[in-house]
Length: 91
Image 1 (cartoon, rainbow, N blue to C red):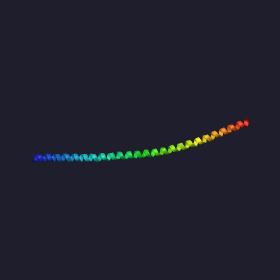
Image 2: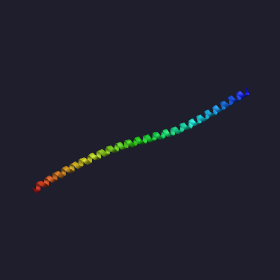
Image 3: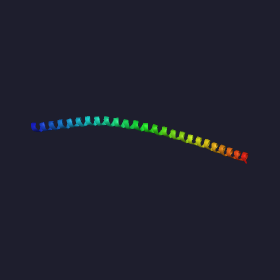
Image 4: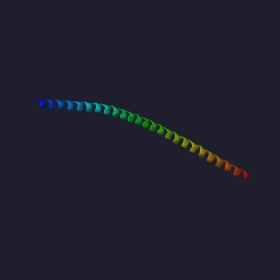
């Protein structure tokens, strides 16, 4: 009977030490995964901020392009008026 008790005690010790090892390993893995997850969240938030900033930049660029286009049209009309006026004067 003592052999049976020794085998049971040995199995209980092995199972409990394995359980403790896996619990500690799980806790470390959980901590590491939390760190990775938090870094991914911060990276995603940075990318979202960058995307919003670029969206605003593109709107500014479009506004500036339209403004420059209007100014160029005014200059073109002014040059045409000047050309017409000079052609009327010299003819």
